[in-house]
Length: 377
Image (cartoon, rainbow, N blue to C red; front, side):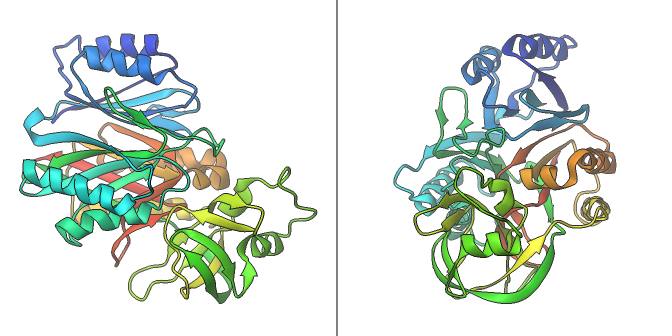
């Protein structure tokens, strides 16, 4: 499998870059597209569709290739995978039947491949991404490999999209089902946010909708511990809840992050992108020191040493909160990951990340860098 990356600031630039990438006879069959909501998705998809290329696409909070980070543009990973080794599956979930939707996708993939693995992207801030993961596990078992991220919208936190050649949705999922007998896919999720304060109990929640912690509205606690003053819906930015997220404690494995994404001011609750069970234990957390960059790179080096010594391509789903917290230094993290395998890389700043937790289960993460390595067997 050969990988190439292209980038541009318009469908016309993408068309030119695609033609240049194929000038040597290269014939990609799959495009992994990360692009701003400001761009014309239909026009970009037509360019790729006219070239006979299957599309997995998500809008972003910023996108990047090995050539650097952009905002408001388009970054694409091109792969020449045998079409018999993958299938694009697309579903919507207007009834919030997240688990049933991915159960259906898993069953369809099993009809195609004996051992399917998945690269997924979902849209809509209300989506319980952890329920999406549970649907795959229900059908294929807890050992199933699923990686991906939730779409962004340039930090507007209003409407995100996933798309493929002829379909797009602000409330759905796009998945690449891979034949794991032919394509190896391995990933590593690393966070590094530091827990602060005492352990607290979630006293009211439903799925990923958190109402109260220690019988206090969750938003009031964010405002209190964030040291915010005179907060109103007009001056409260979601960055406050993203940069003061919850750490959900697990009985086994490392804690996972749960940041607030949709605020309900009438009862001062908010939606997270993953489940926060009533009765669970949480701690607030703050952004890490800059040594977290080294931890992320070391995690990728460990993945290379123990699971994926060689790769054809690298994908990176990095939380938008990392960009907000690390600023320009996020470029050092991305470049450090690229150098581990020194192969083409593309990625996005996402609203949530999905991968297996260190020493744990398949999880929805936040404020995490999820590196995914692909290699044809």
